Each structure stands twice: as C-alpha cells, then as structure tokens.
Image (cartoon, rainbow, N blue to C red):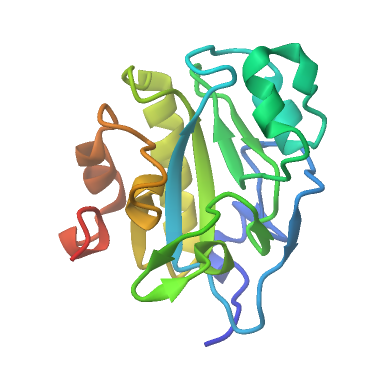
Length: 198
C-alpha cells in the first residue's frame, strides 16, 4: 500500500492535503505518516475546553501548543500535552484545519481498529465542538457532511469511527447524542464501515 495524494477529481478541494474550504491554522503537533500509510479511516471526536464551554479559544490554543494551564483549574492536567487534529468544527459550523491530511495529526492516542494499532498512522481526525451531555448543532452537521464528502472523494477511506470505537474504555466521544444516521446518509458507506464494528 502506498500513500496517495488526493485523487485528481478532488484536486479542486485539496492542495497538499489542505482543504480549500477550511480556515488554515498550522499546528506544530504533527509528523509524517509512516511509509506506505494511506488515509483509510476518519475518526470523529468531541471536544470542549473547559468541558461544556463552547466558543472559547482554548481548543485552538491546545492544538497550537499555546494553552495556558493556569487559565482554568481543569487545564493543569493538560500541561505539556501535545495534541492536534486535522479539523475542528465549531458549533456555528466554522471549519478550521490544523494539519495537512497528508501528515499525521496526534488525535487518536492509544487506539486500534481492524487489528491495527496507532490509528493516527492511517486516519484523519475531525473534532466537533461538543460534549457527551449535549446534542451537536445543525450547522456542525452541515459542515461535517461537506467535509466527509470531500474526504471520501479524495482519499481511500474504508471506515468512519468515533474515538470511543478505536479507544473503548478510554474515550467516550463523540458521545451518545451524536447522530450516526446522519453519517450513514452523508457518506453512503456500507454499514460494516460504520460503528458498531464487529
């Protein structure tokens, strides 16, 4: 298997792995994918800093390596943490990209799928601003649908999973209120390519 750039038909959507319809913010938290790795998986996450607070700049600061641990009591546990995601979708649907899809973002942590560990190697991470206790907002699904369509056109994606599916017992996001039926409709992937995985 080889690492493939976006397919020719999707060239209008991506340039060097950067989606043309996203605000670009270059996170320092990335590295090259291992040789021979292709984008086969999309991982959906939920994030808010602090938990349940939306519209703050703390998530951006975390991905950019600039989060002030003293800004909130909950942030001390994040001191020195180096994480990122390829994409972040805010509650109003605003889409930001932090890492090229051709590079490895640090979003999945200890994870596995299909008997393969280190899902960061072969995945794109999409963070949705949210938490387990609340439903996601309609504008987020609108942005997510367009982004999924572009990624499925550009890369050899085999599956879409939640963080909880690749790190069970450790992660719960995108949470019980996430609408997987929307993903089924938006992606047109077979049921076997979506949670629950056998």
